[in-house]
Amino acid sequence: MFRGAPGVERAREIIERMGQQQIPTSPANYEIWTTHIAGVKPDLSREIEARLERGEPFTDETNEELFERFFANTRLSIQMLETSETIARELDDTVSNLRGAGDHAGSYAKVLQDAAAQFEGGVDSAEFRSVMDHLAVTTHEMIENQLKLAEQIEATSRQVQELQSALESVKVEALTDGLTGLANRRMFDETLRRRAADACADKSDLCLVMLDIDHFRRLNEVWGHSLGDQVLRYIASVLRAHAQGDVLAARYGGEEFVLIMPRTNLNLAEGLAARVSRAVKSKRLSLKSTGDVIGEVTVSVGVARFRDGEAVDDLVARAEACVRGAKAGGRDRVATDAQMDRQNAA
Image 1 (tube, rainbow, N blue to C red):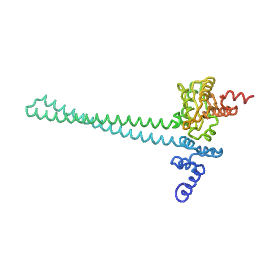
Image 2: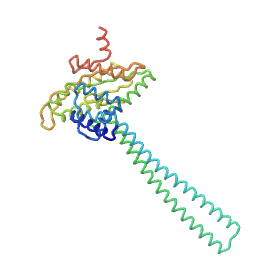
Image 3: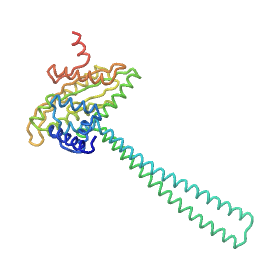
Image 4: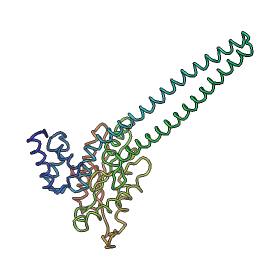
């Protein structure tokens, strides 16, 4: 699709489309829009078209989120594969050395057996000296080989540990939101699927809390993105303080955050959501660079309870509907799916 004159024209189209949205032509952004234009990832294209239709700007934050959701998993797989291959090579080298040492040990054992047989049969002084000289040489060689093997094993052990640490760092980076330090969207998706499966198997409760920062776009427009980033990190710190035990706090996307609460009923989840909402509102923020007082920040919160056997997408959709209900009700409040059901039934 990108060869010859048509390829050049398509590349020009990609650059023009990115320019229309004021998107920097970084490698990651170019990959996003190349994939979109090529139609390789329908989910990505639907996401981009929906944002275009809503007139949402493609900020650095949005571009990073798109790349993280649709491409970072491939990047992680490549890094994991490369690391695994390196570990495999190190282990192969060690196994080869161990096999060589085993062969050498067998030869040394044969020398000892031959010497013992000669001594049992009786030897004169000249033969005795010859046997002892041969034993000394072979013993010295055996010791040297064992020392080399020990050094090789120690070096390999260190290398494998370093590679394991590097792999762990890759995993953490791939599953963590760079701005807030919370779990990212991928980690959220994977965790929610596991928790839903556990809830079905154990017949236990599972609740999802979703938060959306009120008037966040206005904050960015009036005070700039640096203030927006400051607010996002502040919300993350509040969530981190309230996410105790096996509760997972994650950045869902943009100004949206989530809490996955296993083995928690709706009343307890609603109570935690209310405490988080009060904690967020309790602090008056100021712009670090100038000291200008911004005032309080509020959040609209939705709480949904997992229904046995439902798809996780349905749970997320109900949590999002609850957030919309909280905003429609005046913002700075908590809405649950039970409340929404009662309102719809009335």
